[in-house]
Image 1 (cartoon, rainbow, N blue to C red):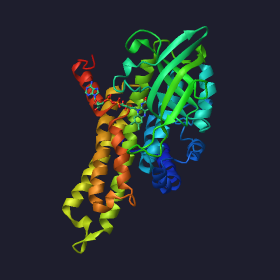
Image 2 (cartoon, rainbow, N blue to C red; image 1 turned 45 degrees about the vertical axis):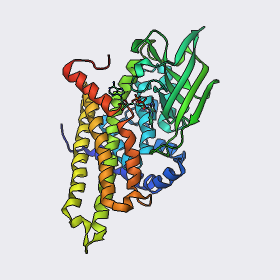
Image 3 (cartoon, helix red, strand yellow; image 1 turned 120 degrees about the horizontal axis):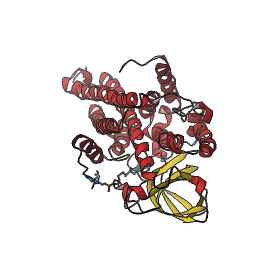
Image 4 (cartoon, rainbow, N blue to C red; image 1 turned 90 degrees about the vertical axis):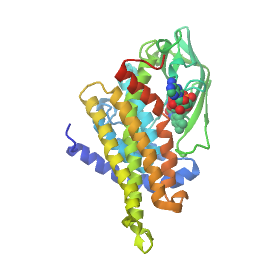
Amino acid sequence: MDLELGDAHRALREVAGAWVDKEVVPHAAAWDRAEAVDRAIVRKLGDMGFLGIEIPEEYGGSGGDALSYCVLLEELGRGDSAVRGIVSVSLGLVAKSIKSYGSEEQKRHWLPRLCAGEALGCFGLTEPETGSDAANLATKAVRDGDGWVLSGTKIFITNGTWAEVAVIFARTGGHGPKGITAFLVPTDTTGFTRTEIKGKLGLRGQATAELVLDGVRVPDSARLGAEGGGFTIAMSALDKGRMGVAAGCVGLARACLEASVRYAREREQFGKPIASYQLVQELIADIAVDVEAARLLAWRVADLVDRGQPFGTAASVAKLFASEAAVKAANNAIQVFGGYGYIDEYPVQKYLRDARVLTLYEGTSQIQKLLIGRALTGVNAFV
Ligand SMILES: Cc1cc2nc3c(=O)[nH]c(=O)nc-3n(C[C@H](O)[C@H](O)[C@H](O)COP(=O)(O)OP(=O)(O)OC[C@H]3O[C@@H](n4cnc5c(N)ncnc54)[C@H](O)[C@@H]3O)c2cc1C
């Protein structure tokens, strides 16, 4: 694998980096305090083509490959994980699932709007009683004439109160993964209610919601993919999603590194910049090594995706390593900042709060280990 970015990817990194410095970084702290990212960011992301990477131009996308997606998500993650998450879900989980599994009609209806930022998508898999054990979800979809009626509750859904369309995974058949079907449900459908979950530790600006579906009626044309094929769609979305989360973690860790280097050179104790102390350099060096390693793991997944090779286990490895690295990086950054790292005048306390969820969502660290262990041993610890 060529580790040097080519011209197109380098150009994307420069454009995305400059955009993040202008449109995201100056506002991230205020959005965090207000517990609300400015909704106008969605149209701006769309105008830049950032909600259409890897979606073909004929559906309003901006083309590009998995490596482009990683490059973009690293820059967004450096700026604000809440904004990065909006893209991870609406583009990474929703638009890409529609691209891969949608009917021509579904693609023409939803993709141009999602890519332009005229609409947002959310991904409704987790339920109050089934998080890691998603194959046992309880939301039901019952056939009714030529359509379906959906009932159930989804929890912790990113973009939940902002989204125009929700991918809802519901049980249409018997127990287990084969009984699950995916639906594209417009969120203004009668019986669909959404409540924002406030008071999160991090990603405070992001709209995370509980979704309640109470007799929500959709036509059969809202079904995404085959009846009983929903769990495959969810897992394939999450495999690629983990690559994006890993790239976002690299961005967050990079922000920790850049802030720590700057601060260590400016802050003086005992008459010298703290950067001159070896124990402070160790904190910084450890972040730097993790940034490089996590980026290589994320880009390795992108390389496999772009060459059409299996990438699921590599995505688990990258997500596991990068998310744990992001938490460590943020913790180290606070150590470099000392007491100033603990107050919200400086960004590093936000980095730690935002990083903490990265080892939880899109499969916890424990679940990634079980996926890696299953691939290596052939023994499935989930049954
Ligand atoms: C901010 C945020 C945004 C989110 N966004 C979305 C979203 O957009 N869409 C969506 O569908 N979900 C979303 N989630 C949900 C997230 O994916 C789940 O929280 C996650 O999958 C874990 O599920 P759980 O919270 O029910 O924890 P549980 O599954 O109850 O896990 C609790 C603990 O038990 C461990 N554990 C569970 N099973 C095993 C096992 N077999 N072996 C070893 N350890 C195990 C876990 O690793 C964890 O440490 C979001 C969550 C948060 C916090």
